[in-house]
Amino acid sequence: MLNIGIIGATAYTSLELIKILLRHPEVKISFLGVRRTDRPKISDIFPSLQGQIELPCNSIQEKEVPDNLDVAFITLPPTISMKYVPHFIQKGIKAIDFSADYRFQDSALYEKWYKARHTDSTGITKAVYGLPELFRDKIKNTQLTANPGCYTTATILALAPLLAKGLIEPDDIIVDAKSGVSGKGREAREDTHYCECNENTEAYAVGGHRHSPEIEHILSTQTGKSVSIQFVPHLIPMNRGILCTIYCNPKIRTGASALNDEAALNIYREFYQKEPFIRLKENNTLPKTKDVSHTNFCDIAVKVTEKRIVILSAIDNLIKGAAGQAVQNMNVMCGFKEETGLK
Image (cartoon, rainbow, N blue to C red; front, side):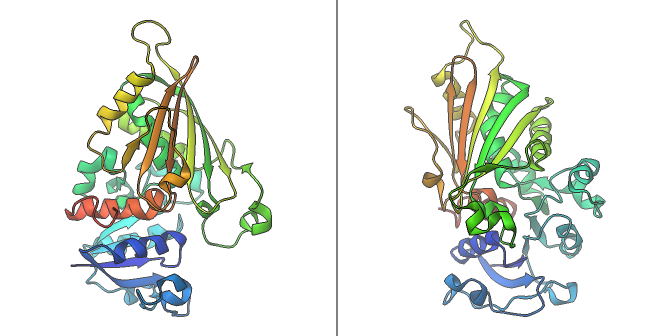
């Protein structure tokens, strides 16, 4: 039985993480850490946990964190997380970081987009990007996994098969992405007040969203091609879920080598044939956020139109886009069956 710590236990993603870990047969939640100064029980913060877990939330100061942890999930914001991760690595504790602090192996790229100096130069070069569908073998052997974000997960998984085959233009990809309000996090902010986001759909961070360089960086690294995307996120009035509609230019438009729906779908079948959390939509059915809600699945459809290839993907931003994927990564890192606790 592994001892688990959660550093930043009051986040929306932490609540989902706790729920998953409570049903995982191989682990025990031993420590919950928070940045706040009082020490409430976790069930006081999340009443839905009453009767399931009554641990107090302790300080995340180094002297407060026990050394007997086997795995630490760090659910702190970017630029803050990297102040705590090195402590766990030095103690020999496996770490899974939810922030963006370890998703770029290029610290200059991180510093450009997050406007902060990266203080853990060793960690950022050794961390493995936590998409098991693409980087499973590296995740098996790492001590530090950088858990991807929700938009990046849905986009990268949708694009990887066609980019790997060289069947779409890598420098002209449009990603129209929509997220539920929980994707903005639990901290109070004006644009997530009920009266601001209810009955409203809006784009934000057009041309400047931090997930754009992350998506380009990972896909370029994975495919060996220079990938460029136009990424436009939208906030929609629902609690959870991500839906991405992606428009690509095929490299071959006409003739015997041109793709059709079935040929494109076969590429995805082959690429993801052994993946337990990828579901391909067939027979003209398309991904819907309701179908993946509260699951670790990523549903994908691909359609070949007269002018473009359109790829659609849907995930639960709090599960496959955060907590579920983190547990999937832990299972890989610790040698457990990958679906454990997630199905």
